[in-house]
Amino acid sequence: MSASPRNYLTMLEAVENLRKRGYNYEFNYEHACLYCDLISKKFNAEDLRITEYYRFEGMSDPDDNTIVYAIESKDGHKGTLIDAYGPYADEHKSAFIQNIRVMD
Image 1 (spheres, helix red, strand yellow):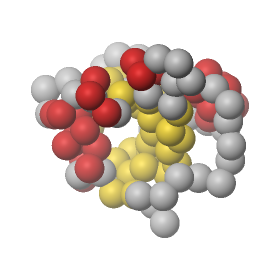
Image 2 (cartoon, one colour):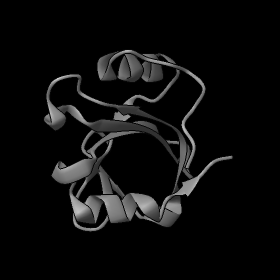
Image 3 (cartoon, helix red, strand yellow):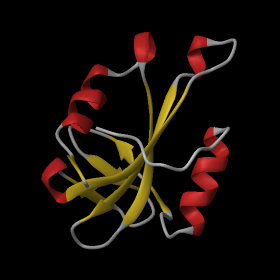
Image 4 (cartoon, rainbow, N blue to C red):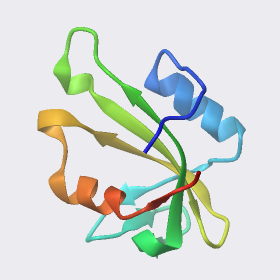
């Protein structure tokens, strides 16, 4: 995977900009799929694609190591998923994300 060309200083800045560009849903990993509370819908990895992602490293706290994924479903739902990386990553969530196609 390669990161998008935009540079953000904070995770919040990235999420806010993605929302301005139509990524309005918040996806959560739940039971081997992504779930969106707002529309009460589950998505399998093959139903999704990662359009952008941004990695953030905490300056003083390794707990702050996160990745923001911009994700779009086949049926047009666009949202974000936030994941940790490193020692605090959820191995099941990370494995699921690896199965989502990355847009070139």
